[in-house]
Each structure stands twice: as structure tokens, then as C-alpha cells.
Length: 126
Image (cartoon, rainbow, N blue to C red; front, side):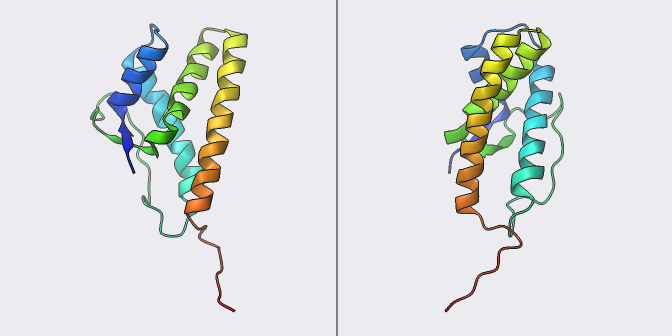
């Protein structure tokens, strides 16, 4: 499954939503989202693909592979977009981006749920 990198997400966001925010701001927001994904989705799975999360910072290599696969990359876009709108105090833009983020997050969570058993799942044969 194709994954995206830190540089790809930042470049894609800047293409879609020109802005004046620094690379460091965007890395912090991406890190916040990946930690949220790790803590709320990945960590509770049986044999998780990763067992810990180290936050990203300005020294993180741009080719760092992120947690969410390419087919859900819009999750990053709308998380950063809602963060930018919140910082700019743009209420309507924030609400729109938040709504899109929540829809993509729910879709990703549902997909992940279907494809990864939870650690406390009990299976048996009849």
C-alpha cells in the first residue's frame, strides 16, 4: 500500500492551499495528526505495524513515511487546513475544513477497523 512522506504532504497542501505558514508549523500539525492516529487507531490493534510514536520536528527527514496511506492523504490536507483557518480566526473556513477532516477521519478509521483486528478481539471456530 502506497504511503506518503512528510515532504509530499506539505507540498500537496501548499499547492492546494497557498499560505504563509512555516514548514515547522505544518510539521507540528502533521505530527499532531499522526500521534492522534497512533493513539486512537493503531495502538489498540493486534500486532500493530508500529509500537510507538516519536513526534516530528524541523529536523525530521522530509522523506519520513507518515502513518496514513496515500488513498487517505486528504486527511492531512484538511487537518492542516483547519489548523490554518483556526490560527487565522476564519470561522467559516475552519468549520468547513473541520467537517471535511472528520469525514476523512471517519472513513480512514472505518477502513482501518475492517482491515486490522483489535487486540482484544476474540476469534473462534465453530
